[in-house]
Length: 410
Image 1: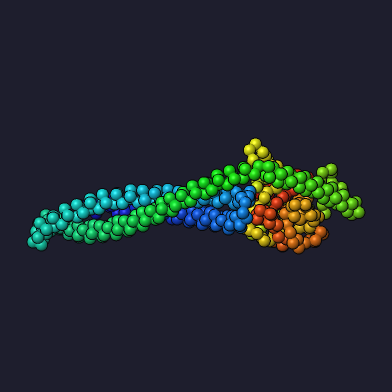
Image 2 (image 1 turned 30 degrees about the horizontal axis):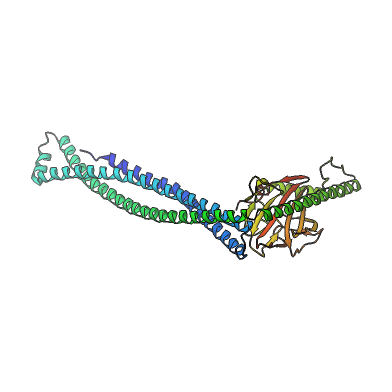
């Protein structure tokens, strides 16, 4: 009988299966844990902003925005926990399969080893000696000696394989117990987050009902905002026209070709800046250090009023009271204008791109001033309802762009 190499081969394969998938799974698990932390931070951030807005006695759109952000972040958190649970379940299933196979082979190994021991116990030293000496030829005697050595070596190898498989089984049992504990912890967290989500949904529904009772006031606020947006759009169009005239004049003075209609004639430096800005799409810093998008770009349904849509020139970013506003990219300050009921408006020129920062106070830049990314522009103004919300826009000449596609993921 020769050593059963099938078990040695299986042991090596099992070790490979136990290490390779786990190494791949660890990255995925780490990513899920990081995602869970990020969502938890967003929930806490929205909670702080909600606390500031709820210091006012009446319910507001700002409170609803912060509450909506908490609901959304908590849903993502629950999805992340679910993914972690599924990953753990998959790991546990794989460990169970390998553990079962190892247990079956362990039983086979022990049975074979018991047979070997029984056979060895029946053969005395005298029997083994007689088996060698009774060989009909010298060559046959040598072969019998070699066989006896191989048989002894096989027994030692069998013992070693049993020990190794036993240690692996113990290790996998420990891992399985650990995975089960992790799963229980995540299931408890999932239950807790679901309860919190249901409570938030209740608050959300109640808040919408209270806001709906103030329909006349909300419609008046909406009209005021739309009027401000129209003034803002006219100002930006005027800025574009002035920039086009200025650039054309400078081009004529420098004997350069003037750009066609609806395009700005750029100096080499401005063209480089414009290309650099365009190359940073989806990588621009946020104009505020903390906050969330409370109003998306384009035509959006009003959060409370039924069948009413709002055409947003950019995005609204709700943030902490007193939050500083910063330039998202280097450029030159265009115009600064006071908007009745909407704070101060600042534009920054980046070649043929413009960024617009609305609803500011305590502005710290001047028209014509060069700024760098992260330079302070001013502070977000807090409205009468306690909400601090920045209006942020990006334009390319006369075309409105979706700022959410340009800002770095948060």
